[in-house]
Image (cartoon, rainbow, N blue to C red):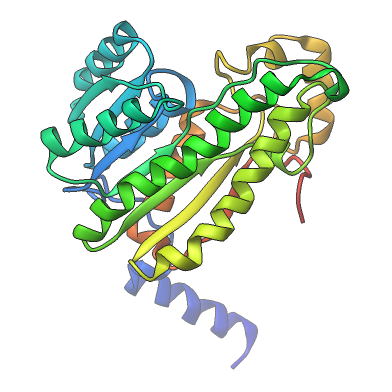
Length: 278
């Protein structure tokens, strides 16, 4: 068969077999699922809640302030998303338990956890960071991510499986100047993803991670609002712009879908092509 005939045969196959061509994620691909998203009243967390909700999941949003929860719930409801919310400081055990129990009481189960909560109380030379800085960053960014997972796993097992998604950062691969302790905490999430995946696979629970680059959120405003810093970042980017929260939300929704059913223990870097890993 010559090249022209081979190409003609291949294109004919694409026309007759839609599964062989590009697919868009079904808008009901997560119907019946219940998702907890921590720190989800703004930025990446809110975008993740919206992406999951738009695909049919019932979403539970949370943050430390009731006013922010109310605002996020109203916004998502205006977009026809099934949503409820509660306050939660993930650094407090009683708040973590309240978030899980509220989800069970209002939604009847748990299928998805998106662990997005993070803090960064320090900027400067890593040698100037204090014990209190390290305690706070590791407690919120790493330890609470594991402890939330430990709380939800039994309830996922009752549903026959589930998905855990950690939100890391490209700083987890390449530490950012001035953000040493924060970067180390994000590296830890890469390891936590790999450590949990084999054990939880036995319960049909997949564990994955997303590593955003510079995303246009309030949390990272000191980076993307500084033209000099962004000029340096853009030199490392293939796509010469700041990312949008919705672009991270879409990656998270994909990892929770059946389209990603053979993916676990992995980190998807969503960074505009920043060269932060092999």
